[in-house]
Figure 1: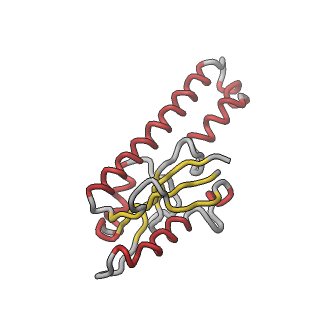
Figure 2: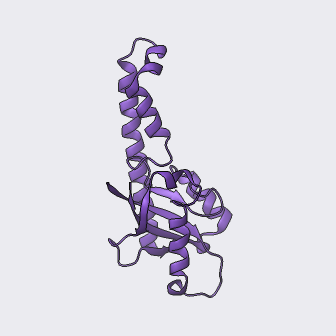
Length: 163
């Protein structure tokens, strides 16, 4: 078993409720992305709030959450870029597309780049109702969530994932 960490953007539209009072619901919503019928539930288990932060739940409108969100997005982009570079190297070693399609290494790298659940490529997920469970791999996707839900209704939840 291995562990990794990820952050999930979750939504709560209750007004005039203190973050402390919503925290358990927000954590349950984030953990729920990795349970039930989701593709992620077959890969991750023992999903829990991260202990590496004073609070694993932050309003997305806070500077600390914005910084962590950008860090998670950059971590995801860099990991996917490295996988794509490996894929290009593997394809360069083949003489034809057909050989590439038959290469175990090429297929494995393709799966990891496109995977929603691969722990080495995704560190940020959408837990809102907008596109629940999707990996967040671009600023545009994050902006769509903010536009749809309103930044004031969004929270970043840090989790530890066992796979």
